[in-house]
Length: 255
Image (tube, rainbow, N blue to C red; front, top):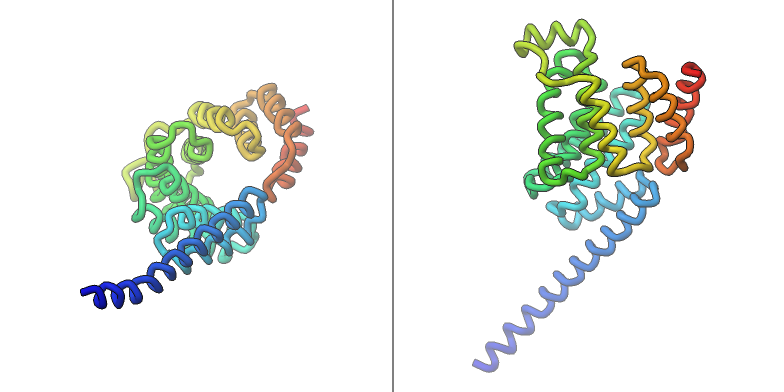
């Protein structure tokens, strides 16, 4: 009996040691990826999260973060086919994250982002078809975290885009889906963007989008105030210099 226990221990020990090594490797990769993401080295962060998924295909943190980064990086391409490639990958990873944990803000948030990005470069039918799902996932994210600034921003963008669909999109909604999603308005977009800013007051994109809606509603003074606040912030994201340039151009037209 004693001999059997010794033999069993000899076989189990290497397996346990190997598992511990794998967990340590994944933990180190996650730490590296998070540091890269936090410092806005996003392509490198994406590579690190993908390495985590090679070692652990169901790692929730890596799944939702990789999805989010595919959406962000893909949005910077000018080529629409390249954008679609990245947004499709973002959606696939979001689906996998939802399978691992659908009762969390982040998995729902990244799905709303992936679908929203794809909708913005799609035709009228696809844009309208996706609108209800985008709203659903943003609201699900807020159900699990009512302070989630990103989800409030997605909901604000949803309100603005749906409230201002063009003629072709409205026709597609009426013919194919029995009408537009209910409740979208510029007023709701403004309120949603204000909440996004309340919970993340240093995000330049949120101010830019809020200023766009104020300008659309002819609330020029509020747009000017919002743009001036934007210009007082320090750029962080790789996208921020572009948004700052747009803000300066918008401000010049308003003054």
